[in-house]
Image (cartoon, rainbow, N blue to C red; front, side, top):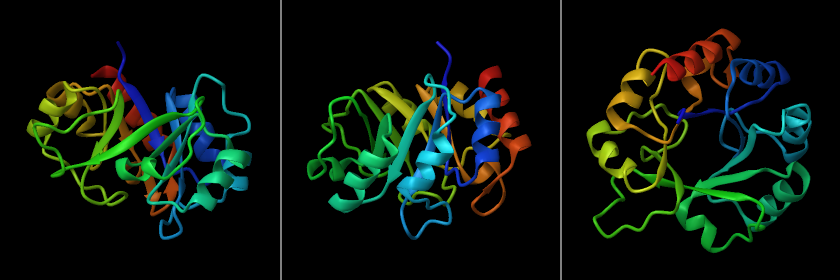
Length: 196
């Protein structure tokens, strides 16, 4: 089965179009005020308006307050909510929305229970921190793991071969400047993931 490829942190329509053209399986929109990739629910809705239905629209959050999540859920209408695992305890997520909890490196023990699909990344999001792939490979066998953090055009193939994740997630490595996606880099990343 082909590895799921998610391009995260969209802020303009050209980037969304580039990810769609490249064949991405999921496109992430960040709702976190401290991020250079932060968008409003209304902006995300407009950016995702022309996306094909087979590409998942992912709301990417970090400890959101209930009001922000409710606004994103009703205005943007994501297919998926991605946020830290603990956040799901207080958020009301409708049955039709997939949950992708973020499990952070260093927080996993032998008795950690994993959801069906989850994102595995470093201690901080959005900083390109690469996780230990040897440890990640063991965790990847415990569910549908989407590997994030520090992946780029040059290493995504090696990551897929070593870790065998369900999916891969990229953001900063496909940018020409912080918060601004590069169409050529998006296409190259997706192509490199597909070859692997």
